[in-house]
Length: 474
Figure: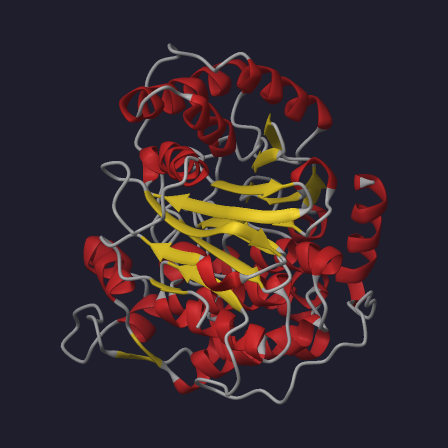
């Protein structure tokens, strides 16, 4: 299955003229709230992304359509953690899926940084995987044309947004080294030379142009076209060291998730190389919250010691060995994980029970801290230079119905937070937006009666310590 999908994707991104979509089309794009009932649940760390997902659902899109639009919107509204230079992983599920749905892996990939005639790469960048990864997920689960899901992000970049609390916090944390880059400084600083603060206007004209080029020319233009050439030139000028061969060769993959079965309930987790899913599965099976937190980190540390970070393509063998580790209860020893990079997450569920849960990262706040020329795209940090984040998400189902979705962030606690939150939901607790670990943050949707069905008992929640937004049925 993966070989065929990868072949299709490689053809698609080269020219992006291939579409597998059904004839469903969204109504005309409208910036801001759209009329009609809310027909799903959405939760994200950044409010504008939540609103974008909600509007896609209201305009007739399914969960995969909404998730794709949200991921692209986050490249505008939270570029500290999810620019077009980012990577990540998503779980997608539709009622009736076997083995818990499908995992889509588009982890940050290291580029070529040395070679004859190459400029010096003092800040190696990761290959931009976000657009390609979302495209693959949408190719398999979406209902509308990919190009119809980009106008929200384009509008947000061109017309501007108010800086959210999360983005303002990220800017404040790294503003001194970040604003040393002229391209970053031109976009993310105020007239007094300080970084933008919460509520300030953020306009990203060049990024709007790049997104519009993807909309009109297809995702492949970023990897095999004029936009890709501009991106590579900008990357090399910024010390990122990427080449066109890096972009062409970095293909996301589709794989089976890790699965825990309990009667009719099936809980799916992201598989390696997103080894945060391994930690979440171990935490889900742990006896207590404190035990879950310790076991999650120990299991991932042991896995990485034995298998490396494996930031490349997922494999059936990796998944099989990770599943065996989960079945064995994970490790209680394995050393400590280093301080891990920041990430962000979101979940979306439509009225028919299709669910998508994603975790994204730049491998560092604002990645390399530099912009790729006039593309407006912030470069992600190479995983060859920084540790891999704990990208983690989980989806639960019962029989042929959706039950819950959880995705997490929060550095070293991200995996434990997702596992604990999912265990609490499966035990009958309502995700009421209370913290589950010290650092770990989750976005969650729970439908106790399952979907498709009556959505009146469904609840969406986001961590109260952040500045995200969760919207449930009304």
